[in-house]
Length: 229
Image 1 (spheres, one colour):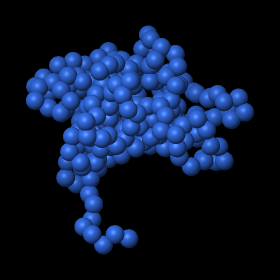
Image 2 (cartoon, helix red, strand yellow):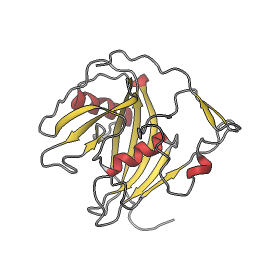
Image 3 (cartoon, one colour):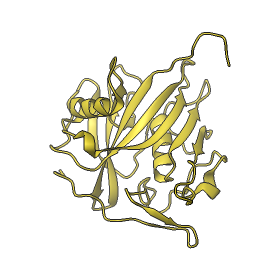
């Protein structure tokens, strides 16, 4: 056990607001603008915890502040946790990604000084590499990822750049191992995109069961949304 000063990190919350579009599953993304980190890049609605604020309340607050949608606490589902270190500076952070499929209101730009675009996408470019690491784990049905960038790395995701994402599997649940564990556990490789390149073609649903013999996933129908713009 270390006897030095206790290490602390900031905590971010990220909203995976998901709908079933004409092209298949889509998530809401916004394009950062103005004098902010990663300006010009696409990112999930996100933000930091306020003092003494729990994570669920934080993601609900950020959703309202950035997109104008109202979310109930019972509709917030934990999706992915990412331990990230940016290429600028040396302080790492924890990002907790939450999936929401049910909400009220139509998403719209609420902070025009920080956002100049908002739309539904399978997976756009250019995108913040940190956000892409979380979505890679999300699509691979894995609960966590380590994404430690090095000085000189690009802030944006680059397919031809160094792969800093290490996907982490979870423990077996009721004797069934996490899907895709054999393919990505400990390799640091991104999952096969498949389909049209969208990150969401095969993500898990609540109550999903895995058929280990055939390598497929049994997915119930998605819950209906209160409003889909």
